[in-house]
Amino acid sequence: MTSTAPAKTAPAKTAAEKTGAHTEEAAALIDDARARIDTLDDRIIGLVQERMAVSAVIQEARITSGGRRISLSREMEILASYRDALGRPGTSLAMTLLELCRGRA
Ligand SMILES: C=C(O[C@@H]1C=C(C(=O)O)C=C[C@H]1O)C(=O)O
Image 1: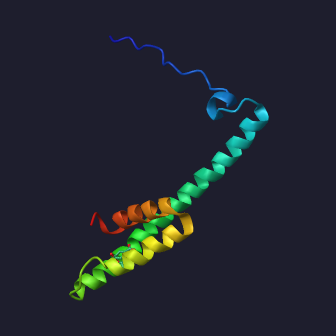
Image 2 (image 1 turned 90 degrees about the vertical axis):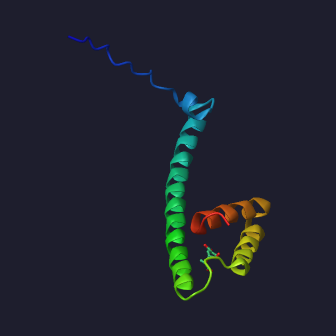
Image 3 (image 1 turned 180 degrees about the vertical axis):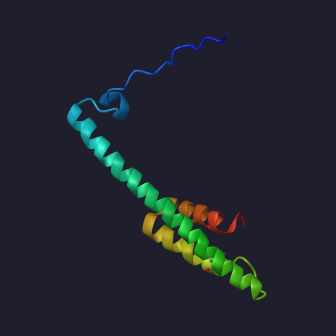
């Protein structure tokens, strides 16, 4: 017969430990704002997945018609658009999106 050790549960973290805040008021604000960020991240991930699906339709149509998967001129437009909106990190973000949508160049 095997003996089963009692399940160890970690003690619940305080609001300060969870958020890094030093007051209950700040911890409550951070909790609320983090919930909004989680919602935004879910939406962003959904939009990225939708973008990947639309991009795949375009690439498939171009390849089926005898063209190439990638359109560098179009990718340059997208990189410029993200850079104009978000600065240099926008370029990195657009490159990551393009990599997700059409694989590494
Ligand atoms: C979707 C296209 O095909 C490829 C994927 C792109 C994208 O995901 O934005 C952009 C250019 C192409 O390399 C397109 O030409 O619009």
